[in-house]
Image (cartoon, rainbow, N blue to C red; front, side, top):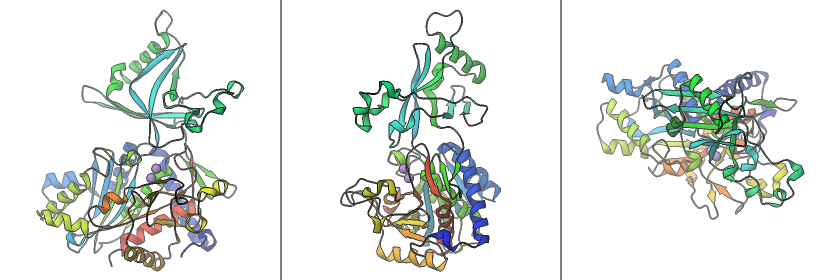
Length: 462
Ligand code: MN
Ligand code: MN
């Protein structure tokens, strides 16, 4: 149904299913604070639900057939799952595509220093953030340290209540006369995002005794040398688990809803799909969206196209034309979050074309900025098809633009998949405080998102 409050239509059974799904999502969100952790969770879930690794399929030389459930983890940072359909693969796929990277602060390669008996790690922020939001709050460290001997140390510190956390200081209000005059962009500058990691000096040490003490700890605990930071990917993220919000617990505050709140239901939709589909189904969880989908694990890379070629090869089809047809004939939902209407900041929205919490999955025909610059503008015929699918399957949905015309803007992976000539539209969940350390979503929208993605896998292209 279009633009109705979903909560008002739920039966007690609906409420039970919605609540169970919300709790499953929270587990995924709390366990997956980095793209690598999300891929790890996705692989474990997919294997438990009968998906086999594409690498294993290639190695064994087995022929892929309808009903086969296959996944591919790309460089441990992006993930794809497929269910092979009965129709020729060249007829195209029904694709869900979300991203699993979120804004954060990355540890620099030469990060460590000591200043006035405090040891710090220097960071470089990742993605679009309001830097002043990321100070004076509990922080955790997640990631990997790759060592020269080929081993890779996995790090996750600050989530267990018994763990220490990390911290970036802000200036006390008493001495902030000058700071309070600055523009929000400069209140906290990028180079001021320095993480406190210790303050206890080594006893008989003159030079940098705190830094040396911390390095000693790292060596004893993790076998790590200072130089190992050179080949590490360590991400500083808000510490702690997601929480339910409100007396009615209808909302969830958590780190990284953008875009795990679409990634998780996309993953679940393909995993929970029962039977053998006519069209081949696909879910993509990709990396690097927040910095422009660049790099070997971002959607601008050819990894997806290459995997499609491998899949066709495994099905006995070695044809470049078949790859192109399979992509061209696909239908896709770019599963990415939308800006939720915020009554506290009503002036940046245009109410007739805004996404509201609780009104279901949100379709953005286009995103972009200014005169729709940089957007994928979905075809009217395709929008009609998704409207029909939503109504046929009782999914609550709404349509929106990303704020008022000329208020700002943003993009998703939609236009990168559209370059293959496939039909793509953005379909995601509305978020308040997007890109803040703690973002807010509605459980009803999460549930309608899952229903939407399932319905789309089942009915698109029919
Ligand atoms: Mn996003
Ligand atoms: Mn984003």
